[in-house]
Image (cartoon, rainbow, N blue to C red; front, top):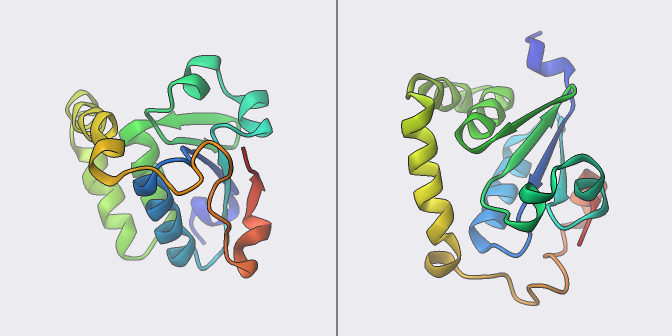
Amino acid sequence: MTPHSRKRFIIFYDSDCKLCNYWVRRVLSADHEKKFLFSSLNGDLAEELLSKPDRINPQSVVLYADGAFYKKSEAAAQIYSALGGRYRFLGALISLIPRSIANSIYDWIAARRLSLFGREKGSGETCPIPRPEDQSRFIDSP
């Protein structure tokens, strides 16, 4: 049993972003141990736990794990590592890149994600409805 296998994680994400929602669906399908929960950056839990700049300008996924917050490339590396299996290698690879370089790449993609991939239909009103078997993994919606 790895240290990650005993933890529960909350991923805060931009529910208006198609790329972000695609990524959440990929994590859901890879998370066989169901350790990840999800919350919109516009939701009540995000308002309670996250700083105002993280909520108002959602340019980063935010991971909450055992009282610690991770953003940008560090969040991605932690998430992939916690997924285990083949994803653990990707998490280790991201962790090897100097954080300033990894975050610069992350920021470049984040700044262009809406123009490249678009917004979800109904953006600003509702986030995409999760599959019935995944609904319990979503803490709140915007």
